Length: 597
Image 1 (cartoon, rainbow, N blue to C red):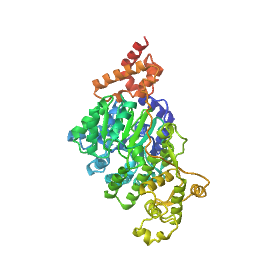
Image 2 (cartoon, rainbow, N blue to C red; image 1 turned 30 degrees about the horizontal axis):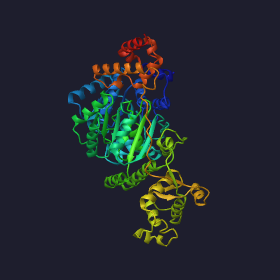
Image 3 (cartoon, rainbow, N blue to C red; image 1 turned 180 degrees about the vertical axis):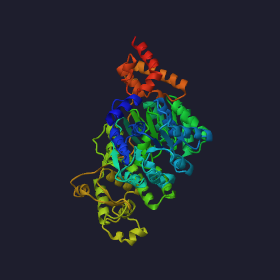
Image 4 (cartoon, rainbow, N blue to C red; image 1 turned 135 degrees about the vertical axis):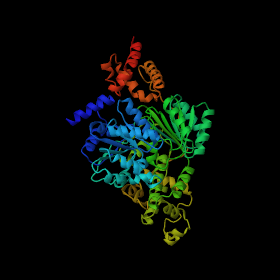
């Protein structure tokens, strides 16, 4: 009975016939008052997991959201689907906050968005305790673990809400969290016997490409012109200064580019956000400040001009491409100087020493992804403890890299790990291998070992790269995560006894051009698709909302497949609910009829 009602809400409000991934199981867990953690890919429909329970249940749902722009997007999206909601944030006037509070008190709205800082303030907590709170959903919950250890300490205090709202269900949602992060989220939020749902991390529609940095601007320009000439995308840079420089250079090259970083004024950031939301073929060049506020489904590429600090960050940022499931790209250039910059940032942070060690390991894992000669998707998924076959949709699969036989050097490295007792990290093992005379090597007596200095003919960069590639292909394991000490396993022994060879990636690989088709080019009704996009833009301008909030590209694509002729057929289109049928059905049906006639 309950499932029937939940599916009815899904169809009438969102226009979908069935739940995706673990959505239904997550919703059932929430309604059963179980502490719940849900890991779902970007674009996988995480918001449905708290919005549907909010519509089904009595009481109010609090959604803890990290960014004001994200709250505004969510409220606007809900409004388009005929759901009244509100937010409480620092940019509202006193009158606006009072209006939102009155709507909550009257029962007019059932969903309220608020930041961790705002939620934990005495004023907000006092007010919210007057309401019947049925669910507290923590969006972007990886921040509880990651930001909570760095600079947004209120994320670590969200566990206090368990005592403040004892009868509420708790739901933590994120697209990126490895096992350690998931455990930390549950601990920080004081969850007990939580239900854990981990959907596949795979985004098969995304093509992954990673190249060594040569002339980054020239490389970026060629990538955009070859594959995404008429597409919207995001370019990430590490520093504000670089964001400004790359934006100016892209404009000179004829791209419609805009900057976004934390050093800009609120008005400047809003202007860029509006351009990004409202226009086609826009490129935003940004620091990670431009991130979780993105809800646009038709971003066709995400490019990185600097190395992200972890696989989680990379996955989160690249996941902003192709949320609609259509073909998209994740493209990156990197250099070893990136590692130095990020290492310095980790060291200078105010985080604990334990956290810094974990952060350094995550950075090494990110560099391993760049240097692997095997399938990048396979490596990404294995990092999140998921197995997969080679994808044939990343640069190493499409254009296999040149490899060199490094078996002898790999054996030297493995022998050094063994001879030092499998109790030391990468730096010490490489120092022994290269014959370093530093204090630690001498104090441990490791200058007396048979492996001491047998790798002095190669530099530190070479041995670090070889070790990362051995780690990425599981020839070396981490024995102690806290100290990142290296150890051997069964695969190591096979290599050491010469029963297997090891080939490492040869650097500076140039990937041939491959143009990615636009959705309309690969569609049987490309002309209709473009007409529907034009109509969508006209309606969006009239209503002053982003085009994707009217209908996403995926929904327009479905209209071209179904070719509905009346309102009952229009409801068969994925993403068309009752509210959008009433608002926009006549205009889109008319455009389809004109095309068919």
